[in-house]
Image (cartoon, rainbow, N blue to C red; front, side):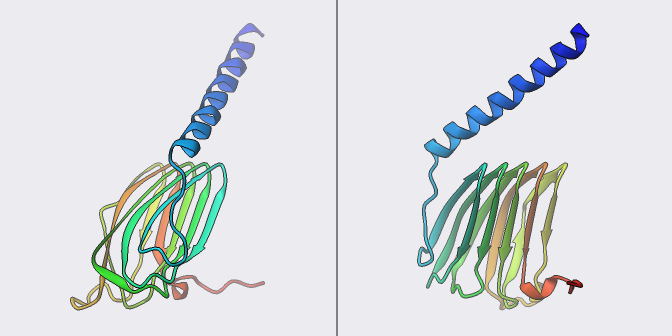
Length: 154
């Protein structure tokens, strides 16, 4: 019985530490950027962010999801040359919708999670390029267009 109680107290301490660290991360790194911003800095810690951008010269930015989720729609964005987006998730998810005319170059990695980048223009050398960097740790990053999803029965 003592061993079980020790394990439960340890787990409770770990989760309390993660929650406290998340609170401080959220306060130290607030989200910046809106629908018109050419550069985004989005932080979702224990919550979610849903953004539809209409930027005129999108340069990229950063996204951090920690026990939360971020959904960004970039289908109405004009991409600036050299655009780079850093997406990192820890026990969370990031979904980025892009136009089918963009090419995605991904350097993102996953550990106990997944990174899925799909772009119909992947073989078009003249397509605008969005470079994706980052890490999915116990979470997922998905980049693609709306047409990438298979229809579901409702």
